[in-house]
Length: 445
Image 1 (spheres, rainbow, N blue to C red):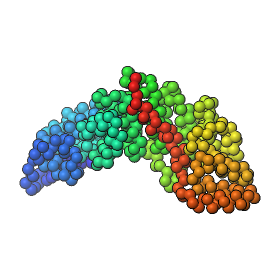
Image 2: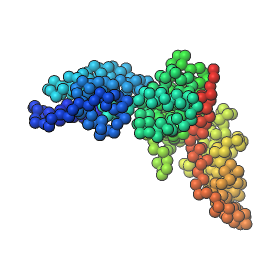
Image 3: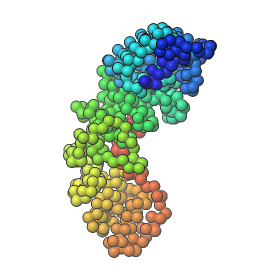
Image 4: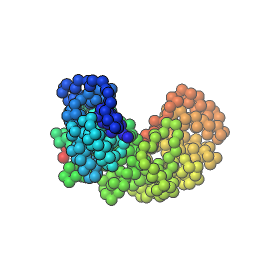
């Protein structure tokens, strides 16, 4: 039995058992109407809400249950199926005061309610629909969005710092996209900003709602739609959620013009789905398992296809080479590195390119060439302690002991955490999302 149904069943009657009524303490006085105003009630601690709901009249319980159902439906409208929408209408109709009366008829009505809800919704969704579900405060979300639209960059962070903010993120998307008082590009920027800020499990509903919104006829123009799709995929890459990346790719596969970086994104998602390994510090994958669709060689083929576009060639070749090196296929990785076009304007890409190239050369017993590659990596990240230590070792193996000693000595004064550029590389287009958000916020048709 879900938390939703058990919550409703327990309030039918504390003393009602199968077979009849037993002796029970006098009921608590019914709550004051002011205590049950939705936006007030849902922000109270759960223990207080339970006490108030249990002591409410059958009429009050009916109103509160219907109100939560209405709010939840509105907040999740973009993702609900026709079957679920029909079920919600039926549940709303069934939630009459009679269902909450401590009678056999009330219990039978509650059992019918449970069966209907269970047929259409998951246990988690049923909990959200119940009287102790997440607070969906329209005014609070609207105020946060209005402040963000007015240029208050910290509005989202302040809202999320509240207990209510994080608790209702999953039910926010439709309330944002449906707020016509704010320009559409700003609403989409707001969703992307949330996606870059909240934990990964909260993000898919935000991106799906935005995708559904931009697909509506006349909702936005082509430029805004393109920025949205680039930004949404960038958020999924920032989170390193490969299943979500693939979902977004599949949704726009027939319309590549919506994201000119889509060919590269295909390779990134495939590489993650085929070859991701759980290591300390790596993001947990929250989505469904679709790994069987992809292999390392299939990912390489996608990177090879992406490299046909001159704008993507450098990154596609580097990512293919990095994938091969991580799989221990160093000779093949070297061939890929030899085909990388020159590009010196992306610090994260440049550092990972030359550092990984150096590691490949080290493995292939070419220390002099490896030292040259490590030195190139340090041009992009001068404070990278690991690269400087590796440079010292390569120089020593090359017979250049004096230079090796100097490199080792300087490494001792550098920060030990030098993974910033690697993390940026791993998050792919996540490094561009803030810029795309800025374009959406500044957008003027």
